[in-house]
Length: 107
Length: 116
Image (cartoon, rainbow over all chains, first blue to last red; front, top):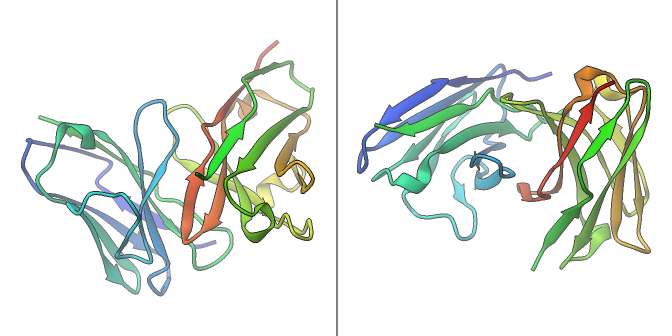
């Protein structure tokens, strides 16, 4: 199975800041990488697919990048509603595996 | 509007089985795989497997092959997951999710608690 190593495990930033979350795949996943946001008590929501494609309705302050084995999610102009846990997922090879998650908090 | 409506919370005894449902609406049920995902309290997400509602074919993650059984009823646009021989390790929230470019729609999740 492809292992997804996500970092950092937790992150605290101020409103208006830019934050970056990273995901490292154990092998090349050819940009088949999705990012999800999960708010407390809710189901995950798709933010980004194919590494850099913004899902419908997702604010443009979210962006994804990367290739090969290294990927990142950037959130510009951090807002209070961005407090969540963020997960990456490779959907290149079955079973589609998730990263361990990054908990984002506001300072 | 695409919706995945899951059944309600379950409290089960160790050794029992439980069948969870996920009713899809707002799209053609047979055109997308349905995935099932497990999330233990304060843990990450773990894929269980997927079903193709068009032909009923399934693909399970190895560790869940003797635990979960996925089925789909195209007459009611409902996907099901049965979990057998429940233990405390099965206490978790279970999500269904539509597979497209990523998992683009998710059910609200169902909490399964296994306790004597």
